Structures are given as structure tokens and as C-alpha cells.
Amino acid sequence: MLASGLIGSGIQQLLRVEGEGALAPPYAWGIVQLGYPVYVLTLLGIWKLPGAVAILAPKYPLTKEWAYAGIFFLLTGGMFSHVASGDDWYQSLTALFLLVLAIASWHLRPAGRRLLPAGRARRASDTRRDVSEGRVA
Image 1 (cartoon, helix red, strand yellow):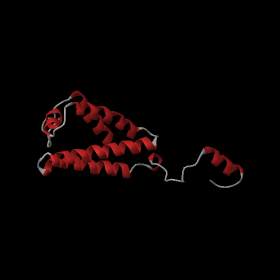
Image 2 (spheres, helix red, strand yellow):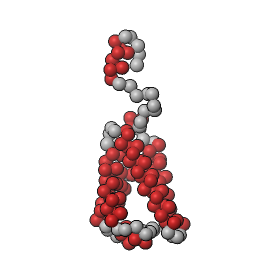
Image 3 (cartoon, helix red, strand yellow):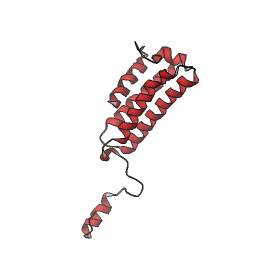
Image 4 (cartoon, one colour):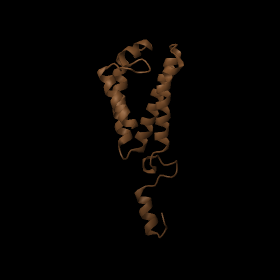
């Protein structure tokens, strides 16, 4: 769900499509209202697409950590931009809701998609040596 949202919003930002009926200011108009140049949408759209791919990929846990960190910075930055520009508090609710979903997605991901804690990573050669010496890995 998180990745599909990234893909959808990434494509909308690349194409600079206006969001009809959006709670917060939609895309090109909204980004200007927040004080940013419109080309920021292109940058955000470009980075969201590989971020979604990284989250969906079955391996590469370090890349996933970076993608989740990027989502965190994107959403907290969006919330801060609304507050700093004087928008009403409720215009940050969408970003807050998505931030909660992103944190839940990060926290609840399967064990095979997590980074091992420091000192827990094992090389294949260590495992073979343990097995050949009769130690259980």
C-alpha cells in the first residue's frame, strides 16, 4: 500500500497533475503556496519511484532502510512546511496519517527484510566452517 502510494504520487508530481478535492494544497499550486519552486515536484517524483521499488524488492535491507528514511524526511518536511507557511493545522493531517502508516510499515516488515543488528551478520564461509567443525550455526 505504501509503495503504491509512492508510485502514484511520484507519477503525479512528475507530470505536475493537480489534485482534485485534496485536503492540503494540491501539487503544483500547493508547492508554490508553500514557497517552493515547481521543479521541486520533479525531484520528489523522481526519488519516490526508486523508493517504492526499494520497498517492494525482496532483498537489499539497507536500501529499504534508506527508502523508509527518505519517506520519513519527506513527510515530516511536508508537515513542517505547512506549519511554517502559516497553513491551518488540519492541512498537516494527511502527512501525519501517511507518516504513521510509513512507520507501521517499517516496524511490521518481515524479518527477512530487516537489517541484522551490528555483530549479528554472518558470512557464508563462517557458517560452512561451523558446520564442518561440528558447531551448530
